[in-house]
Length: 253
Image 1: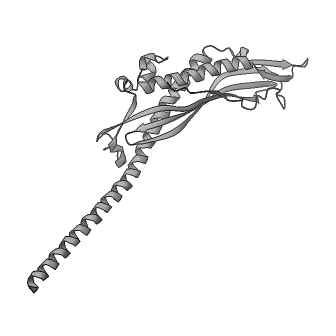
Image 2: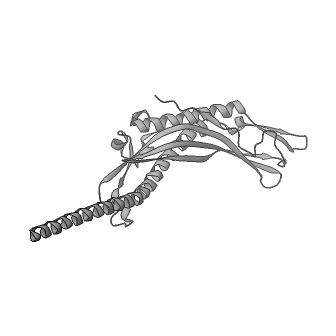
Image 3: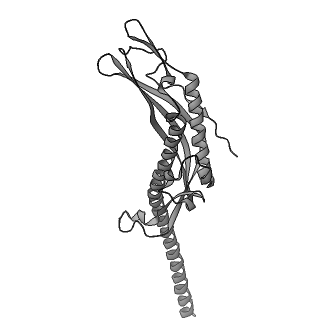
């Protein structure tokens, strides 16, 4: 009887030890995967963010070029007042013209980003040459880029191995646009006026099991004007500062 009880105790101890070992191994595996997942997600999201910003910048620049650069005459943007001696007294913006092209540009950016999100690339405003570096069939599925999972090894020889991870974007929130100017002395008795369009959008970068919201900002020069006269110390229109931002609400469909 004693031998049988001893054998049972030894057997129970072995089972308990095995269960404890399995629990420890499972906990170790879970912790290891969580650690790797955090490291991998960070690397992959960095690549995805770069691609999202790259495509968004292309769309922003194209929209500004189409709705501002190709249509706006710099002479229509400014009202410059000079005294009898040729000194610049004031430099004013044509507010109605500025608000018009800001609205058109901001709407264009939102519409084009939404079309890419839906995969409706045939509805995009710009030509096919703009998307020459992108796979059109993937874009029709709403995928802007595919990242090789091999990049997590940080080795150029392994960058193209492993399954592809699709990257999608989704426009969230409002698009905000504004105009800023810089007025400086240029040569003798000349003023150089530089006008920029500042556009800011919020996007959601979407990966399998992971997503993050990023902010994309762009400052694009749209007009350059050289006028004769000494730059005043102040400007009636506040050209040395940004104009009030124009927010075009994002509407869910």
